[in-house]
Image (cartoon, rainbow, N blue to C red; front, side):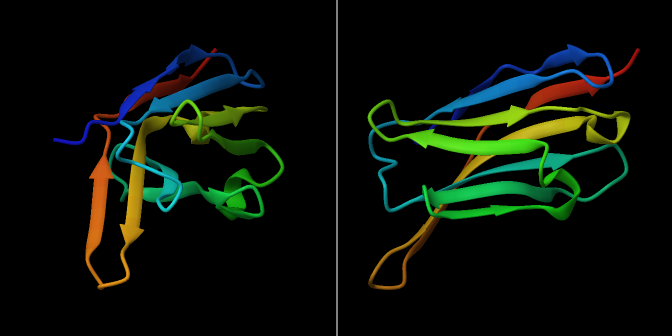
Length: 120
């Protein structure tokens, strides 16, 4: 069973920063797109950022210029650096791994989530 393990969530004041980490097993290789999603109370889960490679990155408009996603393939870890946090960033953040293989098979894996709370 594939397990993605998130860490780094917590309580931070508005304007502060947090860095989330997601450790993946070796079976999650560079073919996988790694992403961070979030779900706030009463809202649908939304994509925050996704990375396939250093030049293939996407961000939600709401986090552009404030959040940065990166991955270390040697450590099988993906990071989300979050700066200038606001109350609207409060949510459970989920790490995910997605791949579509050449034969069309799709794999999607999710972490258990980590809470990020932005409050004074």
